Image (cartoon, rainbow over all chains, first blue to last red; front, side, top):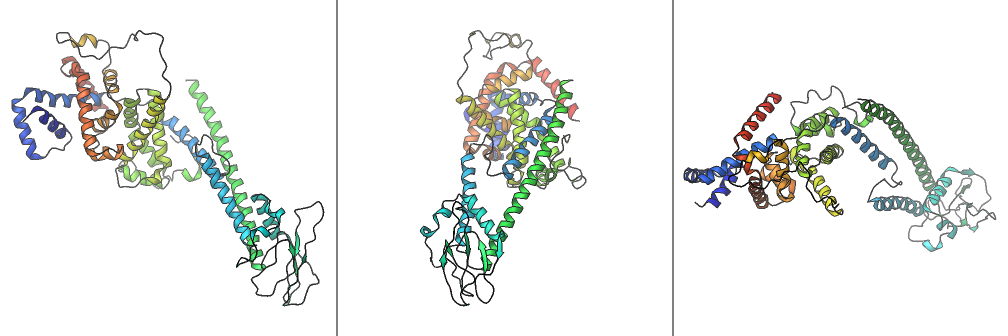
Length: 266
Length: 229
């Protein structure tokens, strides 16, 4: 056996990878080769030297680890509670911003989908330009207003089973006010056209709804109202979580200051 | 540990875990996944020394090594839910450590090198060139700590050989585990370990036949055994 091959086998033997039959052949070679024997002994001694050179971490390693872990957890909580706020030192900030914009856009699309007639009755271009130009958050607020401000009023409308449309009355200088009422046949899936004034009839007193047009029926209004309530609840929860994080931060900062002071005095 | 109050969701459930010292690493991390902080404390106790030692041999800077070891343990905590018992916990942990070290080394390489205006070497630097055959090896090693010599020798092994070498020699990971940690093929792992051994042997050859060094090594090993028991 050549020494190169023997040394390879010695390495495998050290790592427990040498088959038994090759081990016998290796031992036979080592019986007659002092250099390879020295190599095997050197590998063993090297391993002992490496083991003896183990370094111990500093005494305050765990204490510092705890501080850094707390900080990392606070950062993770902050990022989760306020996704629309760009996280610090984050190279993927743009992706989070894109994600947040996508969520807001989706919410606005869902709200707008309520106002689009099934079967494509109203093309997006027919949207009231003042409404279409609102930013997404304003659009959400407009939807919330539609659900929250419901003022029943009797309006002299057409007889049940008929639909009638009249132009929207807008107050000058107040572009956000859209007062409209709906005319719709009972059970009909078609709602009013955007920007138009219709009143609900169908055997009951018509109800005036303030806000964006194109609402089909009471179910849609209830959904808008529910979404608005959920939105408010989510905002309240986020505020609560931020308060907790703030309190934790204050507690940890004061504790950390005390600890740092005590370490500094040692 | 535990001096600073944790958030509710990370607070340890006292008494719900039981004694942790006898648990396997994989069982400990499973408890960490459920929010048991005592299990995490035990993981830190078991691995802080090994991680620090391993990383110190890679970066040769105690401050950096401490920071990277802590980063490894923090990541293990935050991403505990990502661990699956497909591989050993130690393999997973050392994978995190190796990746962090690699990233740090890459970042250091990209930074402009600071040139020293003083061309003379520092007084305490003793080159590890192989001594002349007839010279007394102990003369050049006078006044030097054994650990520091070994660390210097280790730092002269190229990084790509050093990682598998240390994982095998010090951490006693198998070839397959080293393969998982480093992402290298099995044959590459084997050849890099062999090359590192050859290189390291050349660097520390003066020590390998030195009677006083070997005696010191034996005394050190006896002391370490006593401390462990």
